[in-house]
Figure 1 (tube, helix red, strand yellow):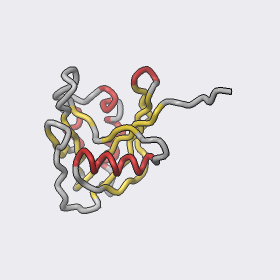
Figure 2: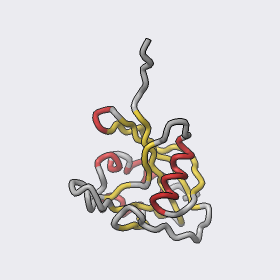
Figure 3: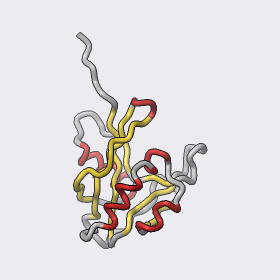
Length: 139
């Protein structure tokens, strides 16, 4: 009997510091270069979503994060081949400065400025949840 598996999981980190959200600008591929997204990537076999968020933030930004609750809906990617799940996160060292190792630029964004960035479509779907995260009293 063949095992039926669901879509592969891709995680994203909604990193919040002082009420601002960290966004990163794609450098490649050319079709999406210049657009904005949250840090993240694929969950490896045997890896938890939280561990993948931590690993991806270390690889992409050079920082350690504490992973908190999932936010927003699951977002289907690549015709259902993948599903994107976003987790709220904070820097374990609040004074750490993320570095764009794999992206063109980084930017800390106010809630009222979220709609002004040219987000990738998958991340744009999450803007209401990201806005709600930023306006929470504990953000």
